[in-house]
Each structure stands twice: as structure tokens, then as C-alpha cells.
Length: 483
Ligand code: NAP
Image 1 (tube, helix red, strand yellow):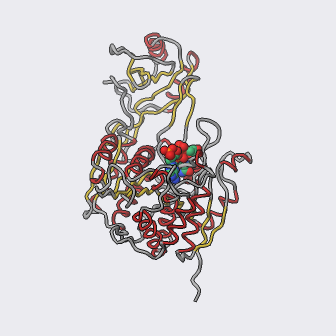
Image 2 (tube, rainbow, N blue to C red):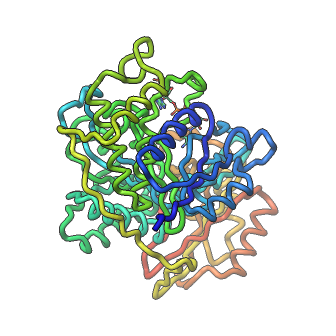
Image 3 (cartoon, rainbow, N blue to C red):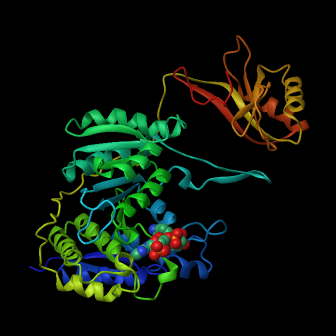
């Protein structure tokens, strides 16, 4: 019986993408994996056609069908205009987990060689600042919303523990900035602490992200699996790849319950595009992750071993390892790996892998139901050229007949009214916090509407945040200097 071939969408990508992806495809075929490719476009060429998302309908249709993608890097316009096509692809297909393994490799000499680095960064992939919800609050003040959901935290934490189980790993660190962002980053920490007891065989530890960066440089071998939020994970996974030789060696998998996208951590490295000098290992190892995801364990092990043997032999290395004046071409390196297919590294063990049990979650919107809730005030954000004192007096006067009173005004998070004697360099963007007067049970919609209307008659407000209490706990944080 002829085994069925699995269809995979291949996106060659921009810059060095096509060179690296070609190498990976050659190896996948030569290793005997039962894969068929469907090539589609995304990124720069698509932006040029005027498609602002960078991802055309044919690509979306292909990914929806194949549910598996091998992708080269895509260029992202910086700071204006179009969205990142990478982030669009990850978010359209809810690939919520970004798995970035980093392992010391033979023949790739770094200051860390011999220390046995073998870790995986599991980065939340669709939430956080990468939700990309940004607004100019005033002509001179920009804001980006950092959205973290309980459902998102639960999925990424479970994925990290399940990956540890599948790969026989012993420890999971959760790295957050919960000491500062108690509600957003704190939600990941709290979720981690709730879920960890379900995995008694795995050591669970929280670490503050800045110390994690410090420890990764100082003693990286202490880490096994690190689970973290999107932005933290983006940064520390570039750091971890540098520990083992750089971005040329860093593969990644974007996984979700429906679709998985495999790609290098690196970008399109435009200065090397078309020169046939780039290191294709990161994309090759991403294809190895893809093969394991598709259950093609034998072909995956064959390619990983061939890469290890090639590096171990140390004869055919690319410019990022030995300098671009001495390095071999991308195609020569690929030929060497192809020639080593079937050989097994004697010194470097390929880890035993089992399929990861992906956490399942209800596709319906997650609704967390507290026993009690009430609105205990409101933050009104106002654009004003007044001094804090003048603005404060004006708002106190406006609210004098309202069930809420002005408690304080802050500027970029620091209380400036009533003055605490701080030296704050103010901008024209003020958070004005109104709280319930004594014996008022809750701020009603009617009173909120009235207050906003009155403020709007004298000032320019640009956004409003209700101050909720869930089960008696404040669902908002205090300003610096607020009692
Ligand atoms: P980059 O493309 O990752 O390149 C940064 C540097 O990393 C290169 O100059 C090179 O270092 C090294 N490098 C990257 N890939 C390598 C490889 N395969 N072999 C050897 N060295 C490699 O980052 P960037 O220049 O910041 O970004 C360029 C574009 O890619 C941007 O448009 C960005 O948005 C996009 N990007 C896409 C993705 C993605 O598709 N997932 C990810 C990141 C960035 P040396 O200069 O030291 O030789």
C-alpha cells in the first residue's frame, strides 16, 4: 500500500528566505518524508500588489486546507503602514504557542561551548502588545494596549508543561514582569502557579524576566523550558539563539490547535539576500520540527543527525560560523548535509520525542464569571494644556454634584494632583481618577454618562476606563504616589 503524502503550504518568503527554504525542502525530500508542497506567497511581494495584510486570499485558503506551513522570513515595514504579515499569519490561524528550542551544537564554538545548553523558550504568540491595538491619545502621546487573557495564559502554560512531558524535560520556568505589571504579566504568573501542581514530576519556578535575561547570559544551562509572554519571549529567544551560535541556528514552531507554522527565528537578513552565503540550518531545523509535528519521526531524526554530523565534521561551515571570507555557500552546506543523511552522530544524542498533547480549549469566547462585581469609579483620560492644579480644581467643580469625586490626577502613571511634591515632567495627557463618594454603592451608567457630558463641555477627553471590582478585589492598579 502506498502511504499518503501530507500536503504542506510552503512560503519561500523574502530576502534570504527562498535560499534557506529550498535547502530545507531538498532535505525533507531526500530523507524520504511523505510530504507534498503547495507553494504560496506572503510578505514583501504581496505588499507591493497593494494587499495591506501581506497575506493574499490564496495563501489563507491553502493554509486553511493543509493546516501546516513551512515558511521563510517575511519583511515587515517598520513603524508605519502595513501590519506584519508574520503576525497576521500567526493570529489568523491562532497559532498561540511559539516553541523555540536552543541547543549547543557540535563544531559551533561559542563562549558557552561545553556547558550543555539545551532549552526551549515557549512564547505566547498572539496576545500581549502584539495584539497591535494602538492609538494616538493626543498628537504627542501614543498608546499600545497590552492584552493578556486568562484563556491565553492557560493555553500557553499547559503547552509548556506538555512539551516538557513530551521531551522528557524536568523543569519549567515562568518568566514575567509581574512585579511591575501585576494584572497583565501577573495573570500569567498566577495561571502558572495554578496549573503547575497538575504536573508533579516537573519542577516549576517563577523568575522575573530581567533576571531571567541575566541568568541566561550567566548560567544558561540551569534552564530547561521557559514559558513567557509574547514580547518577553521575542527578546529572550533572540538572546538564547546567540548563546549557541546565533540566529542561523535557531528554529521555531508556531503551534495552535488547528494550524502549525514552522520558520526560523531570524528575519529576511536583506544584506545577504541572493548571495548564497546564509546559514540555512535554522530553517532546516524548523523543517525537522515540522516533520515531528506531522509524525514523520524517522525523517526528522535523519535530518537532525545529518546536520549534527556535518557540524561535527567541521569541514563545511557557513560564514556566520567561520567568517564570510572563509565560509562555504548555502548550497555547499546543504550538499554536505544531504551527503550525511543516514549517518548518526556518535557524540551528540538526538533527543527522544513523543507527540505533544496540545491542550484543548473551548472555541467559544471565554467568560470568567465572578460571584460579585461593581464599578467603584472611573478613569477619564483628558488632553489638556492646563496645569495639574488648574485641571484638578476644574474637575472637582464639575463633579461636585456627582456620586463620584476626583481622587487624583496622574501624568504618565505618576500622581501629580493633589501634589505629592514629585518632580514630574508632564505631557498633555492626564488620567483623572474619580471614585465613589461614601455610602454610594456603585457608579451607574446614568451618572457616568452625565459626568462625561459635563467634562466634555469644558475639556477634551479621549478615553475612559471604568474601575471594576471583581469578588471584592480591585481590577485596576494605583498610580505611582497614589494612596
Ligand atoms: P534578521 O533578518 O534576523 O537579521 C539580523 C542579523 O542576524 C543578520 O544581519 C545576521 O547577522 C544574522 N542572521 C540572520 N539570519 C541569519 C542566518 N540564517 N545565518 C546567519 N546569520 C543570520 O533581522 P533584521 O535585520 O532585524 O530584520 C530584517 C527583516 O526581517 C525585517 O523586515 C523584519 O521585520 C523581518 N523579520 C521577519 C521575521 C519572520 O519572518 N519571522 C523575524 C524577524 C525579522 P550579521 O549581520 O551579524 O551577519
